[in-house]
Length: 288
Image (cartoon, rainbow, N blue to C red; front, side, top):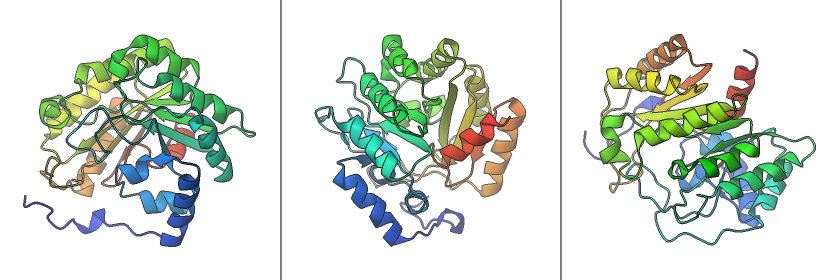
């Protein structure tokens, strides 16, 4: 596929620039980052129009350099002790009922950033009414003590993305480990069965359908509840290339197969990202 080939029609999205600017200013005033902007998410416009955002804590510099991700790799920033309060303030001003929190990977921190996640959850739970909370965590090197800190804060959802099929890890996630990511999901579910676990992958990187179906089985074996599938979009020429723009009907096939295999909720379409319509996913899953 030629570099930066024109995207198909089903990957185009529109949004209200004024609505985006309102949310962007609030987040800037409170010195908060969002993965929406840092990861160049194609749904930024839709989510900002609805006054929702996925907060990205622990700075904007990642200690890893995954070849698919647009988040900046560099020297990590000092942890901001006021960040949890600022995040809760933003959630209140935006009147959020479901809050998603993610972070850059912080391998430099002893707990991988677990305590900052927990403090954010605690601050959000002080709000009246308190929103439901979903955290999208890095693998924290598989450290169970760090995972316990997050679990103890009792978010409604703990998400950790496996991102791609195992055969592509060396090319796409060279500093991550497929088994370790599965172990994170398994440990959370075993330790706290009432917390919903979630994971997601990108397609279009060169994986086969058989590999995707096998990955579903691996993830289900951990007890994972919620599964997301979206199209990989190349942020720049420095990142791994798109091998295929997967057609919408294939995403439909993946969704149907995942539901038949036993996931409680599946979001699968070209523009799906891990936190896309996360509140709706939780509400739907709770009704089952």
